[in-house]
Image (cartoon, rainbow, N blue to C red; front, side):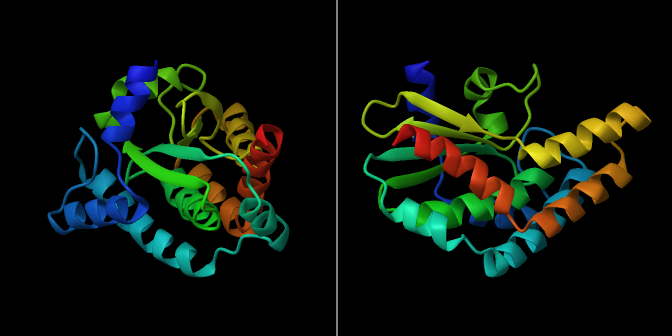
Amino acid sequence: MESIIQNSIANSLSYTEYRNKVSTLLKEGKSTGNEQSEALTHYSELNETRMNRLEKTIRITNEFTEKLQQLQKEYIWLVISEGWCGDAAQLLPIIHKMAELSPKIDLKIAFRDENDDLMHLFLTNGSRSIPKLIILDKNTLEVLGDFGPRPQGAKQLILDYKAEHGVVDETAKTNLQLWYLHDKGLSTQTEIMEIMAALE
């Protein structure tokens, strides 16, 4: 496991590098990942717009800002993501803003399809769901916790929709985006900070 994590960190990007890679591929009419399709490129374009907006509008609460600035231990936050993933577009700007507030957090982003071994260590109910935030001890690379692919309320919304309709369709995806819009990143901040508080 340690060598997989070491390799994934070596193969990871900073937030800015990640954003630039996704943008560059979009200019070539491509999305990140092994699979290429019009749908995935379309989702990547939507996510680009979404992330640009969230970077301007997301606010980390005063309480969490203070707690992040007071962290004692050093961490790597390693996120598994892809440019076409709607949940990643919602969560990455929040995770980035949180990491920026603390000199003790080093944020790295690894593409799922380029880091298959890492993804297999962090499956959600057997599936390769992303984004996944893996919290590591910076010095030992020990896995201390993980979060994702969605905050609890968003997970529940999709589970309920699937139970009622049997599928996750465009309506479900629209409902999910509305949930994120109303939540304003608070659930994500709260759930990640609960993990961090337990570690400190």
